[in-house]
Image (cartoon, rainbow, N blue to C red; front, side, top):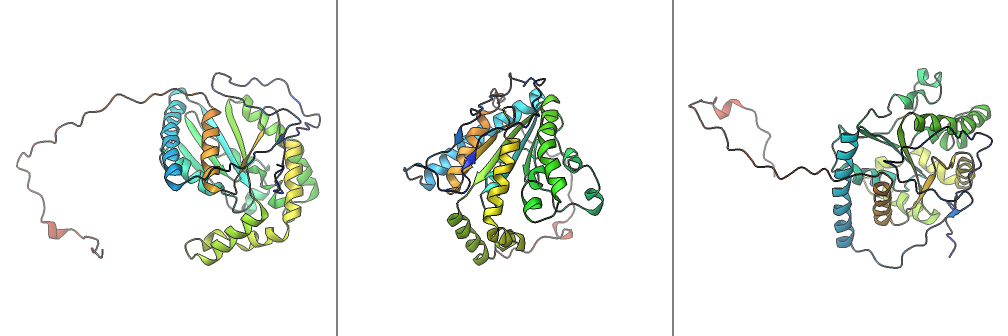
Length: 305
């Protein structure tokens, strides 16, 4: 059945004469599951119901594997960049949260940049992102990335046509530069249907704990749905490359999307289990007569609950 989402993912890779051929992937670490150049990336929805118990069980198993991957990245000194793009309320943040919640923030960190400052607007476009790239033994998850220029900046008129066209042509070269520098680059696009996005927006509007997640810009994006579709298709046309392809995550079901994305991420990097042997807790130091200050000299948080 054909996916009715506007996000029918174009996997066509038109390199526009920017092919380099000099880059060699670090194949000892990367599972390069590249789609064929003209393949349409579509995934049919599973008819099987995923219960909460099944979801939590699978997520727990995947998170254990993420810890193993983290230790391998640290041990081998790998540099990993994962981009999360997609429409508003597509489920990027929820997936990132499930990836990071069991990992060491000193190894795996999230970059979610705000609006560029006046100074940053005068810099080379990619400059403010470069400063957040990983050192050896680090994983960086970009919650939106340099692809803002191909999406929101283009659609909302925050960049001019010359800047937009320059991005489309220079982005493949920028990413090849990252790959040649030894960075493992993985790009995800979260695809959500019109109906599901609307449902999630209404949920955010009505839930005080989620109200901060929706902004005037999000509401404006609803009015420009088709323009965003066109921008996404153009972005894929120029930047879906054999060496750094886009991977589309069907995200109408958030739980399935999280599991599928994490499972795929784990499959993209070869790693080994470096779990250390069981540890033994040492005995507590014996009291040698030290007298502690009176407990009433300390200030305690009131026990309201």
